[in-house]
Image 1: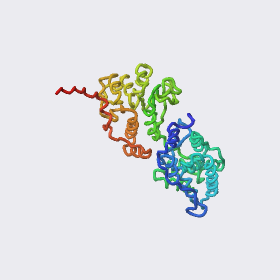
Image 2: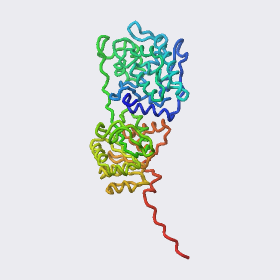
Image 3: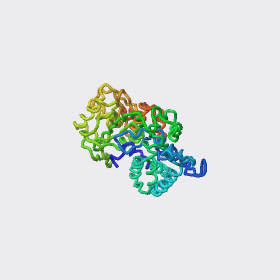
Image 4: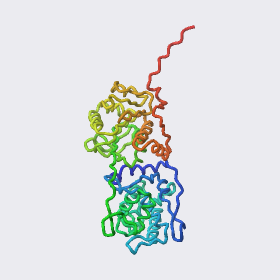
Length: 434
């Protein structure tokens, strides 16, 4: 699956196995607004998979930022067609309710069979799979790649969905007015989702400056993603990496890559291996770099390749972060000089010994000082990751993310119950004889 979809999307799917977001009630196709209508709440279905309806923009190409249309907004167009049995835009080359309903029914029946192993626990996956199948082949392929990672590829009959999906995809034309759905989206979404859906299903509503014969205007340029690199080495601590990664994976702006000295698989201190995307020589420039701790830190302190790589990346990063004894590596590389920092309290002296001139903070869950963000041991890295996310998106966004993952975020970075371990206990004097 590597190389098929962005790392953030791959990890979003992996999060399903943790069942961290409470499932919301699924609204199955039913008799709704009128005879022959089907009401599907795609927002609820997406949240049932821990997808964020307000931000998710899936794409099967990791080199792009998606089609610049929020998936939930695209699915809202499908939902509006399913709910309106009188809709028929075929005369102008657009869609009609009957064809869309039949295609969705086929896709849903196929998804029910394909996702049988998952639907007992994640019933909303069926509607989401059927919905993505209706948004064009690229969306279908992206979602199928995700489910394949769970051993449930979409191999059923989706021919009708893929056929009508050409009109519902971002580059399709649902109302047949000669203007692409994405162009209508770019012109109308600023007024809200309802305005976009109404325009996309009304041939009389045209994007300013276009006509049926003129090409649709290009969509707004995508916001460049920030490349966040996590540097692994033999003997890294698993939770140092995957605790923060669980949080980072839900930030669409982050393009997450795994890096090691030679690339390939890297064995952790816990004995399990992680496949890295790049070696030091092939890795892209990083906007954010994070180095974990672990028993392997001791070896890496004497590894010039690691220290030089961290120095080189730090020269261009927006943020440089460490978890646990990863700060010892930053200190040895000279990166923390002149900054405040913290580290694993049980191994506090290890980091201090690498550069005593650093202002080492003994009582801190994590420390932010300029572009440097360092955390205490292991689980504190997850708190640090949410703090990092808050720097980009605000504290409320970080709180909402933690809540959606049923994680109790220790927001107070100075509240460190393990700080006492960083200071040697005073020698106990012998009792005076009586």
